[in-house]
Every structure is written in C-alpha cells, then in structure tokens.
Image 1 (cartoon, rainbow over the protein chains, first blue to last red):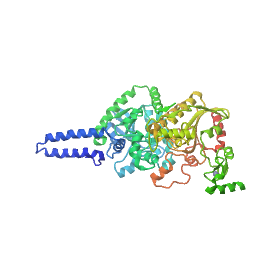
Image 2 (spheres, chains in turn brown, cyan):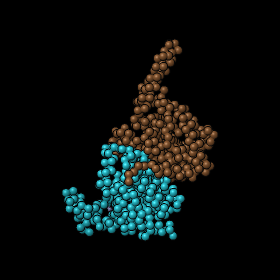
Image 3 (cartoon, protein in one colour):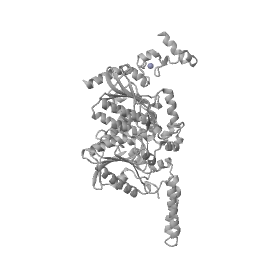
Image 4 (cartoon, each protein chain N blue to C red):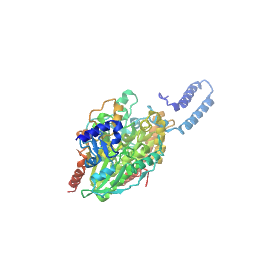
Length: 316
Length: 280
Ligand SMILES: [Zn+2]
C-alpha cells in the first residue's frame, strides 16, 4: 500500500485494504462472492473518481512522491544504460541525469530531470530544479547524440529552473535560451515526455522536440498554480482556481496542439504501478522512434520548426 | 540652479504637487531630480544628473533610434484571442480591452522595418506598459514574423526587450512562444543576418530565456535589471539577501552574458556602428 495517500484516493485505498484483509480470511471462509463484489466496487469508484479529476487533483498526482521518476523509467525501459555526468564547464548538476541506453536494441540518448524521494535525496537532486550547468550538461549530451546520430528522449519533471543567486550569476536565462535554440536544430529525432511536472522555461529547457508526449496525470504550463495564484490573485489561496484557469492538463494541452499524444497511466496513476507505467511508455516510445526514423532529417527539422510556429492563437 | 532646487522642495510636500503642471515635469526615480519634459527628450529619457534610464516604450525608441518617418509597422492590429478563456480577479478579455484603451497599443511589442542612419533594419520593441511587457501568443507571433522579415530582406534584426516574461493568462501557449521565437532565430542564424538584442529595464523570465539572450550582440542599457528569476522570487526561494548590484546590466557584463553596455543617448550611434561593421 502506498505510504502517501492523496485525499481523493482514500476511499479506493481503504477498499483495497479491506479486500486484502478478506483475501486472507477467504482461506478459511467462503467469501469469494463478497470479494468479487468489492473488487467491482473499487473498479467503479476508481473510474468515477479518475474520470472527474480537477486540474488541481491532477497537479497533486503529478507531484505524488511515489511517482516514477526519470531514472525509474530509464531502468525499466532501457538496457545497457550508462549514465554520463557533467557539463565539461563547471560541474555535474544532479537535478538532471542522462546517458546512452538501448531501447529495443537501438541506442538512444536519455536525458531527464530527476527528483528525490526523501529529504536527503531531494537535497541531493535539488528537488529536480536545474542550474545553468544542468542545461549545459543536457545540451552536451544531446550534442553527443547528434554527433553519433542517436535519437534523443527527454523526460520533463521539474517544479522549475532553480531560482538561486549562483544560478543567475552563471546565466540561467542564457542556458535555457541556448538549449531551446539548439534543440530547435538538433539533427537527430527528439522525443519529449512529460512524466510529472512541467514548470515553465525550466521544463522547456529540455523540452523542444519532434514528438511531445505527456503522461495522463501531469501538468505543463508557464507557471505553477501556486505562484500564479500569488501573482494574479495576490494570495496563495487560489491555487485550485489558478490550476483550472491555466489549462495545464494533458487533456487541455492536446486541444491546443502543444502535446501530440497522451500516454495512459495505470489505474490510479503511475505511482500505483511503476512497472506497468514504464511498459506502456516503452511500447509507445518504440512506436514513435520507428515513425521518426522514417523521416529524413531535413524534413524533420522543417516539421519541428513548423510545429512550434503553429503554437499560439491570435486575432488579426 | 536655484529654480530647480525650489521646485524640488515643492514636490516633496504633497499639497504643492499641483504647482507642477501634469506631464511637463518628471521626477527622477533614482535621484529625485525634477526634469523638464523637453530636457528629458533631449537626453533620450535619461536623467541628466544621475543617468537613470526611464522606462520608455516603443514610441520613444522609434523616435530616438530611427530615421524620421522611416518606421513601417507590421501586424499592427494583431491582438490576443484569449485562447484559454482566462479569468483571475478580472477577465483577461476585459484586461486586454482596458489596456488597449489605456495605452493605445494592441499588445506588448511593436514590430516593423525602419532605417537607422540610412541602414535598413527590422526592429521589434517591447512595451512594458502592456501587461508588464509579457509575452503571449501575439508577442511570439509578431517577433517570429519580424525574424522572418529579416531573413527575407537580409535587414539586420534589432529586438529591444523590456518584459516581465511569459504571459500567465495564455498558459502553456505563452511558454511555447519561447520555442517559436528561438526556432526562428536558428533560421536567421543560418541566413547569416545579424541580430542585435537590446536588453532594457527590466527584462526577466521567458523573454531573457529566449530571444533576449540570443543576440549575436547583446547590448544592455546601464543599470537595467536583467535575469531569469525575479529578485523577489530568488529572495523567497533562498532566504538570502541579494548582493548589491545583483542582476544589473553591469553585473551581467562582469559575468560574461552581455557584450556591452550602452547609454541610451549613444544607442543610435552604437547600432549604426555595429551594423556598419557587419556590412563592411
Ligand atoms: Zn536622476
């Protein structure tokens, strides 16, 4: 059973516990029918709760501390993963991980923001908030992939680029701008997967690509709902409204063509079943990689630019 | 100058405020000097005493930088379509309507072609008065089209940024304008057309983290606040006091992120010189 239970998950988790207890009893008692009934009830409850999640509830799932993170996916999706470190300029940023690995026998470059699971590992990972050296590390790895003609897969999961004094001194804005720029013309296919939180420029700094995939219960926007609330409502108390107003869920973003495809999550969210979440993503990645391989690189770059040029709505 | 001192002491008492005709006199925000409108214009909207650079808009830059009557505006009436149907304490639609009325601008950037000392340029100038110079779909689209114009005409591109970053009321669509503008800049670069980025006070967030930092030449106005995260956010996140001069143009020059700092009075000549260097 999960250690952290979100408020709206509670009724489901409670029933699941009950079923688990009854299953133990069923060794001596004939309660198969009742168990079956309860399991059906769980199913129904799950469907009704998860088909009506509010934007804020989705934000909560995206931040669930037991959600699979970048390395959890990489471990399950790839073989022969070799992690590579450092930006060759300043130091290794632990908030982003990357390296070569094989998916279905083909070498790819994997780069993603990495959160920690407890206080200690979160401090080590800086809560997945990258510094400029992180963006430069990511770019170095992507350039390496370009040199050896390997596709790039990036995983977005960050509450934002780190707003620190040193980050500004080392050019946080320049580092992000440079990555967006370079990714726009990187001469290998890029698949971007939003696996958790996609907060603003900090996320987009590794988020330009040919295919933008987003897991079902993630958010991606220009600002976190809390910060949006504090600026526009001048209070931290309007995060639910802000989340709703920002249209930051996968279902919203696919309508605006900001993402190309929603990756389904296991029942109850990716945190309930890491193996299954990774398997679903792996199958989709293989499919997408095969599709992208068919397109000549010059054509692909033209399509990549067009894709982003088409984003935005104006009246003239 | 005696009369100057007198005026200065006058403005300090609020009851006397009306003695200074509205719009004729301006108080320097930095040194409190009282400056006459004509004098301010003469000094390219900088304080003659302390060099403080006032936060001016596109109209003033057009007047300061471009040859007379050379500006041909592009996409003048492009407006936000409020794609998210966004409502905070106010409807975004209403906010847009009100700010258009109040400023006479249609969004936070004006783009067009013009001449600087006879040199053709494509120029984009941001207006902070329009929702904090924030970048939504309109700013992104107008900048992208300006870059396209630059590629077609081979006229050097100049973007003058003054912006709080991406516009919240258009959510992820605003964020994607970073990718849109940077994407177009890769093509400008391929076409070998020079791009000069002029960063003015303040330029933060998504604007700095896209075209702001990507000039072939990055110029900043003296004292301008330039950064990614705003100072308030940094103070909040780190719990630290910010060092003096943090995130100013001078700080960025020292850290290696801009090529030069240029006083606004010399900006026209500096741009001319640079364009000439690229051409010759
Ligand atoms: Zn002054």
